[in-house]
Amino acid sequence: MQTRKIPLGRKIHLGLKHFGYSLRHMRLSTAVILLILTAVALVSLLPIVYVICNAFKPLEELFLYPPRFFVRNPTTQNFTDFMYATDVSTVPFTRYLFNSVVVTLSATALIIVSSLCCAYAFSKLRFPGQKGLFRMITIALMFSPEAVVITRYLVVNRLGLIDTLWAHILPHLALPMGVFLIKQFMDQVPNSLSEAAKIDGAGEMRILWSIITPAVLPAVGAVLIIAFQNVWGDMSTSTLYTVSESMKTLPYFVSSLTSGLTASSVARKGATAAAGLLMLLPNFIIFAVLQKSMIETMVTSGIK
Amino acid sequence: MPLREKIGGTWAQMKTAWIAYALIAPFMLCFCIFIVGPVASATVLSFTSYDSIQAPVFTGLDNFVKMLTKDVILMKYVIPNTLLFAVVVGPVGYALQFGLAWMINKAPKPMKKPYIMAIYAPSIAGGVLISVVWQVFFSSDRLGYLNDFLLNMGFINNPVAWTQDKNWLLPIMMLVTLWSSMGVGFLSLFAGMQNVDGQLYEAGKIDGISSPLLELFYITIPSMKPQMLFSAVMAIVNALKSGSIGVQLSGQNPTPNYAGQLIQSHIEDYGFARFELGYATSLSFMLLVVTYILSRVCFRLLGAKEDE
Image 1 (cartoon, each protein chain N blue to C red):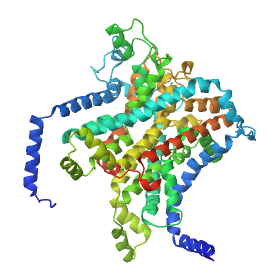
Image 2 (image 1 turned 90 degrees about the horizontal axis):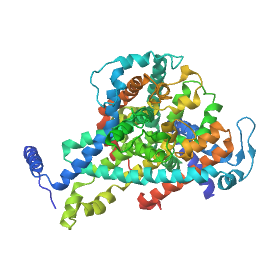
Image 3 (image 1 turned 180 degrees about the horizontal axis):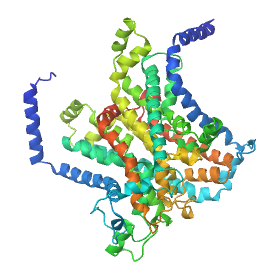
Image 4 (image 1 turned 45 degrees about the horizontal axis):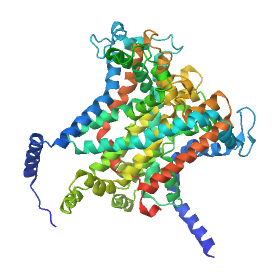
């Protein structure tokens, strides 16, 4: 069957007409679906809205009885509170922040570069052992460090990484998901592109950098989101691999604000929420910016 | 000699492919050190008795015998808890993700993005925030939101210490984990559904597929099996990752009355509190084996046919 070509203008017209139609004559099933989705969306957002509200609540509203959900007189007091909350820890807040920023940025950059190189070899080059190794990476997708927490500790210890910033970075570099997602996406890039460049005398690094990488930017964006979230929010490296306070990261600091938070224990409820919000913000910004590339990458994420 | 030629051929191939090996080297090195290494040493250590000070002593199957016969807590609390938790967070969570992705796919176009953002948001929130928010929500006095609500409605007369209560801890753990589980796997399902060829649906209509349910089973699911497999693997990972949520919520390991004791907390309890590293790694080893079997089942069900 041949498909008829419809001019673009008419297509848009048809689309708009169709949309108007669907709003006026919305089917009952669609209405039910929208209702359920809206309810689920509200429930999932509720805790996050709650954190935002609490972060800006003044003290008297935080301990109001009966508790009130929304904030009435917003204040930034809580933010300055936790920044000077030196009674919790011997190290100032900025030290944790500094550690977190250094660790997260370097780990994310290293993950992206090593995943790109590795994915390129698996996708566009041929070498003995290729199939078996990639199979191993696919199986390792389901690996979670939590399962072998003890031997992982022994390995980090043996490498002499305990109580260094490297202990936050290096274990995160083994992220099979990064290689997997970029490789699957790269498989869609036609080989003719790189072959033409090869005939023109470009080396592999050159091809990877100036031809392949621009073509797989969405996958790089998706890996950036995942890597950033993994490293930025990970508390386990702080609790397991570091001893001194000055080597710990932000998630540890936030949770040390919470620990011992029986509701009667005073004051820190607002500061905790403010710190929690600070933890969340970069994740949300990055996801909002790179959202489109995330969805695009997920299309090719399937395991074939 | 054919074998010799074959080896010679492979060697020649390897020599020309040196750049490929150089490219995969950085990742594979980390992969071997932090994934293969720990898994291999867990396998070896699980046949030993090891206290982290003296060298490990080979004890054969002693650890596994102990697991089956002496570890009462494991049999009585940890395994039933873990099974229940895994079933709810794994398959039920997976079905939930699939259902939500399907519904969003049916929603009018301009609504899709906000829904995706809203439902994906909790998985961004991360473990730290989980304890920040939910601890206050389930807080044990009148200032906890749940207690306040139930007191006002007259359902309860005294505040309940939700996360310290042995009847409530496990359900709360499941709820919180489900809430935060709509992550990469969920996005993959949605993207897979979006990408099903529209012509298939039209062809299906001509062939008499009339209800959305038939459409789902005969067109949508068969065309998105790779994404379904990926997100099934993600569901397994998620169930594994959330193993210590009971400890996070209740603030103690072991959890009150072992009500929220999952296998991961049990491993940490033996490894980092009692320093019985040999026994703890044998538990890890069993966990790895079970995970591997589960993922094989997923691959069998959803994987490409030539794989079998």
